Length: 231
Image (cartoon, rainbow, N blue to C red; front, side, top):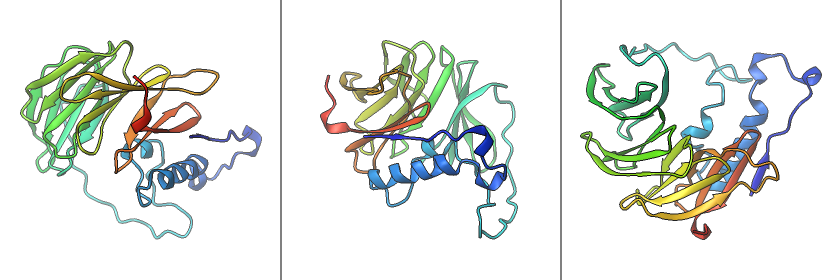
């Protein structure tokens, strides 16, 4: 299933900041309904939606105190919050994964990780952290920083996501989403971009029941049947 995000001519685009992202948000709502997520969009899907309180009819939001995390690589490329909210993982151009305690902002662990990082994702139980790099390396790390499994995808990897049960890992690559066995690193299946003009697929995300797989590509959103992916 493919959802197109319509392009609006520049002369007709609304200038009000309150309406920016409305078209994309509407498309994401459609995808959320298809995924059966009870109106809750995947975090990666919400990354491009303005996080503002200025929606029409909404009351002004109170300002919240922010905890600043320092000493990060100046080019932070990815971050992922653990399911319990206690640990923030970050990675960037220096190739290191840093785990931060969210209650103090202090670095709890630094994991040296060769290659420029592109994405991070926690398993639902918070016991494992998946990482990907520009050279196609994929790693499964323990919460304590040990490398449990690693393999190399055939091309650049720009996104990773665990299935809800933690048994599969999806990687977003050029024109394809690949699904791997998270324990062995074996390739389980591949979903190809059905578009005539193949573009990279990113922001993979499983539905809560693990039966569907969401991906995005430039101006398209796609939903695949995860159980029927061909090897």
